[in-house]
Length: 442
Image 1 (cartoon, helix red, strand yellow):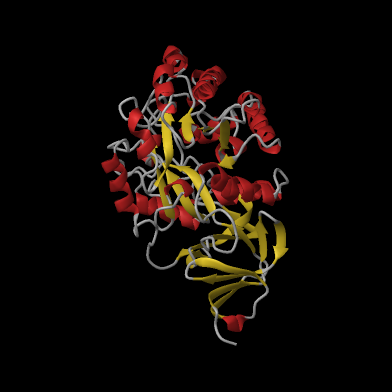
Image 2: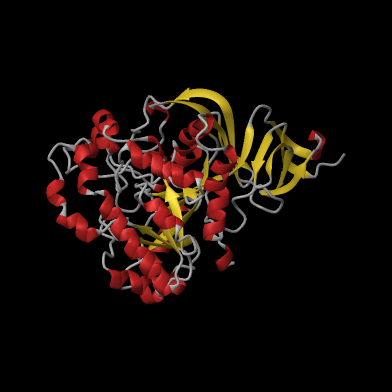
């Protein structure tokens, strides 16, 4: 029998939009060429995946890889090494770099830096500002751009549009779904006296529930007024979920593994400033409320909000310590552990990390295991019992808030466009990352 395919993945269980079942996957020229039952003689290479599950490649739709301007914390190469080591095949990277990603030249520079240097595929958010708002219909469709990101509350970097008029100007011009950091900067400034020197547990007191609720209410009102589609990032309160549920026609929702896993005050007692992020980790009641948003379908995607800082920076006393924690490498194992503990189904995990990004951002050729799509796969062992440890971490920052956490479920392989990039905790071959394509820019 003549060889038809470049690669066959055999004896695995596929988890996809049409359910879970045992089927082979055939790959040719970096694309999925067939799904069914094939003989190994039909391919130049065969990988036996018995006992493993093949998922569509996980897409992390919120990472901060810090390049340019913050390479001492992370860069595009090291961040992407962490991604593929954790089973992530594609990332959307944020614009609060230095310089900010707010011009066509800055975006083109990032794409050039990333191409064939990142190990995973990539796209970059364009920072929305008052100054570039009128140009956004063209800028948001540039090659390598996944959409517009707006900070309504201060976080790392200098990119912020805190007032309703500025947000309305941006949303009056966007055509794709725009992503938002939704915290009310005016309330944050008013409440700075609630920060307690040396007490990171005061972080959610300062950045309280109302700072999130107020901003999300404002944002939804503006989105409805302008007819824009918005994506509300890293929801930290249970209170926001009913509000967002009532506005699903205009708003999609991201949650993070951190907000689904950690809860105060225990997290702050154990981790100190390593639990500090924006918006903050809150108490168990809010964590339960976020889970309720997952179970009820209000939450659409899971993003890591990978936001590394050096250990020395994080060891500064609060509030001088910067907010953010790494997470792209731990997203898959942490969430697979939640699956094994019965908190969500494997199908729901796949929907939130592959199918959801495809739907919301109109990705071309990724997010499903289907003939003609890129051969991007996250291959996992759901029975593997492992402990997350510092020695496995690929991020330049060198630490993780999950250090010492025992998990069941582990990424065994990362395949991107038919090529093994990670296998059994080892990165294979040279970097070959390419810009993710979107249907509106074809």
